[in-house]
Picture 1 (cartoon, rainbow, N blue to C red):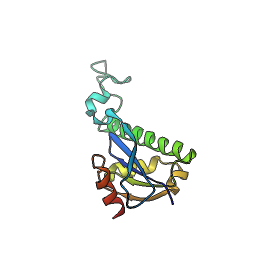
Picture 2: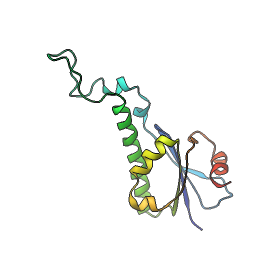
Picture 3: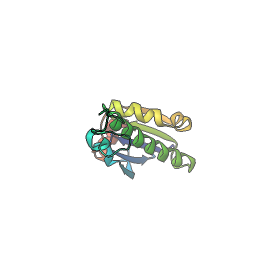
Picture 4: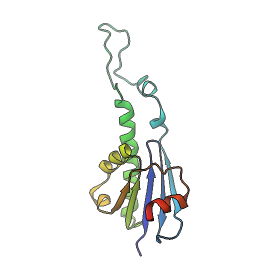
Length: 142
C-alpha cells in the first residue's frame, strides 16, 4: 500500500501528516513555521538595504506594494517544497496530497520539483492547517 503525505499549509505554517490507510487517522510527522509571512509589509521592508528615506531625490526604493510579503510566501513555499524533495529522495512517501488556501496552493505548486509534482495525487483548496488529524482525513479521503 502507498504511503501518503498530506501537506496542510498556509502562508506561515505547514503541517505534514502521513498515512498508509485511507481509513486511519493521519499521524503528524512535521510542523513547519515561517513567522515572517505574518509580518506587515512595513515591518518586512523597514530595514532592507536600498531603501531611501529623505535623501536627495527623496525617492523610495526597494520592495513595495506587497512585494516583500509575496517574497516571504515564495520563500516559505520553497522551504516546504525542499522538505518534500528531500523526503522523496529518502523514499519516505509515495504520494502527496496538498491542502492549502487557493492563493498559497498555487505558490506551493509552482515551487515543487518536477519529481514531487508527479507524486501529487490531488490538491484541495482549503485551509486545514489548524484542523485535527481526523478532520483532515475526512476532508481528504471522504
